[in-house]
Image (cartoon, rainbow, N blue to C red; front, side, top):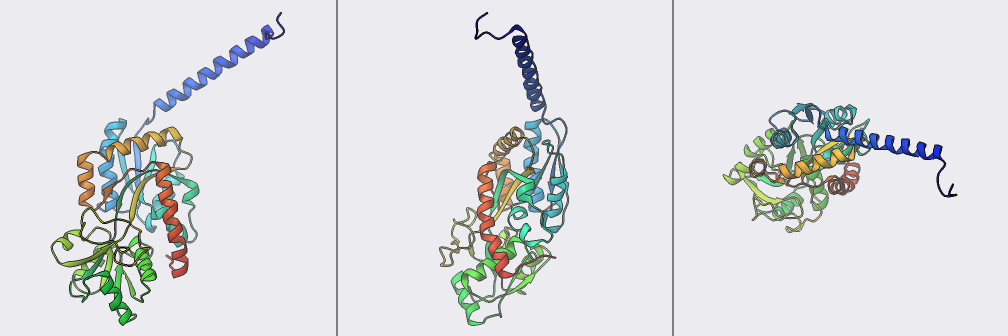
Length: 330
């Protein structure tokens, strides 16, 4: 027998092991091919009819066709998305439960809520869905036609002007505080239970300005409120004549509202990648882009890696801001 030839017993053992490995690989492939095996649940941490809910339903329709299973939107509102995050974290990591949420669930909530979830550990980004800039909007009668004039007005009368938000810890509030910090002004924060009542008080002249999350765009177009500037690194495609705050001389206010799809942390990579690819296809559909535009949202598909970097960059801005301004949510 050749010294390099395996003993017959050893050779039979190797053949059996190879065959077993092939069966395992085939079984794994078949299990992967079977996904999704039942309806897919999209958990949404906000009420039906809101921006996040509408986005989930609009994207869900083409996903349902592509994946061959029903897409079920499960609204679990409360705690700025934390209730939905907890529900998603508890779900089986088998690719049948995802969460649609603004990225504040990962960037801001861990610093705002005590005890905090650990979404960076227990959730993984699958894909971004879209981005909505925040619009610096003033009441019509305010004697300020630009953000520079607004800042000058605030500095001339510290503590006299007021700005509204959708409530403590919302992106409207955080960007409002970032604006105050970067502009060096003292303005009173007036929290509301959502963006809609804040918008109504802007229209009624009860507060001086706020950062609109694309809910009042029609009122801006019709001249019932005054758009001074937009947050973000570039101008809004919906109001290209409005400068960014950086262009207006107030740098560093570059946060908007990112929305995305998240999965339990241990969801298989192949499923995450497939879902991200199908989301990217859905966001290219004209009907999806049009419906998002009606919400003031641009369709932007970043895969899990790119979306994760966006989340990390925003977290690096918000964590020190929340601590420095003493922002907390009970």
